[in-house]
Image (cartoon, rainbow, N blue to C red):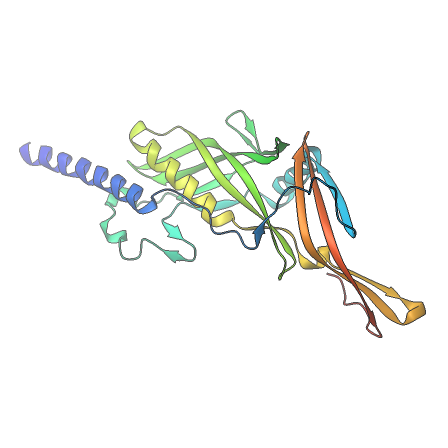
Length: 259
C-alpha cells in the first residue's frame, strides 16, 4: 500500500511538473512576424491620384467562410510545442511525462459553429476582430476532449516587393470548456500557440490579383501598374481598401498571363 501511495504521489508530481514545463516552454504565445509594413488608415486629405477603392462588408466574409467550411472542410492544427518550422520538443520531449503520450489526436480544429458561437469577422472602430469556435483533444489525464472559442484581432500588412497583402490573426483570448481546471491553463496556451503559429501569415491578395497590365493595341504597347501603397479603414461593418498604383507604359511588350 505504501508503494502504491508513493507511486501515485510520484505520478501526480510528474504530471504537475510536466504542465509547468509546457507552460514554461510556450511562454507568452505570439504570432509569427508579419511580412511587409503595417497597413495604415487613409490620409485625412484624401487619396492620391491613381488610387482604387475596394469595399467589402461582413456579409461577404460570412459567405466566404461558409463556403470554406462547406466545401473545403474545417482547418486543423497540431497541439504541439513548435516555433516556426523547428520543434521546441526535440530535445525536451523526453522530459514530458508519459501522461502526455497516448492515442489522442492532439490537435485543435476550427469549426463553423460551436459553444453558441459562429466563426465570423467584424469591422468596427478601426479594427478587424474575429470569433473562432474550436474543438480538439489533448493527452492529459488520459485523452481529454474539449471545445470552446477564441477571440482574435486581425492585422494587415503590405509587402511592396512581393506585391502582396498579408493578414495576421492574433489570438487575444481563449475560452475552453470540457477539461479539468488543472488542465485548462495548459490547453488554453496550446490552443493559442497552435493557431498563432500555424495559421499565420495569411495571404489576402497576391501579386497577380493586384497587378494591372492592359494592352494598348494602337500603340503596340502595354499599360502596367504596380501597387505602391495600401491603406485600409474599418467602419460600420465594412472593410475599405485604398490601393494606390504607380503606372508606366511599356512599348512592344505584351502583358504577362494572369493567374
